[in-house]
Amino acid sequence: MLGLKDSCIDPASQKQYIKSLTGGKDNSNEGAQNGITYAFVVEFESVKDRDYYVDADPSHQEFKTFVAPILEEAVVVDYSEGVFQDFIEQGYHNIQLTNFKNPSSLSASSASLLCS
View 1 (cartoon, rainbow, N blue to C red):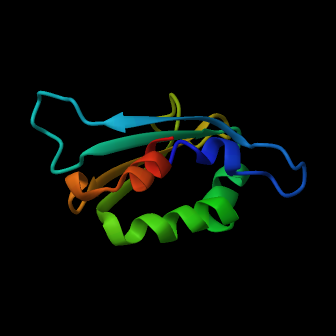
View 2 (cartoon, rainbow, N blue to C red; view 1 turned 120 degrees about the vertical axis):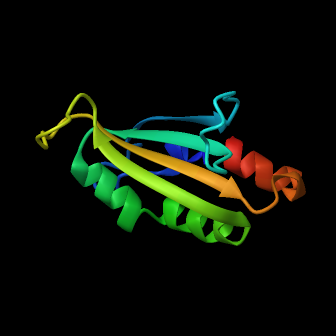
């Protein structure tokens, strides 16, 4: 998943368009995870970039196909930083929360693709 920051390329500019991508394994002691074991935050400059990522980017499409068989659940939330009422075109984020069917069964290559 983290490798998508480098592999997702804007077709017009031929440059990377993901502003930032971070994530990791849950380590909360609150007990409010509802089974979600990993979280990722993808930040985009615009809604256009976010929509291309979600709908058309070949690297992201390939990643979704690869991870689907080992993914038990995914929750995706899109938001604009600091915006709680009105939609303003600035700093778009895409949060992906995942729960793998059997995290201990991930192969080393699967784990490196997900977390590299």
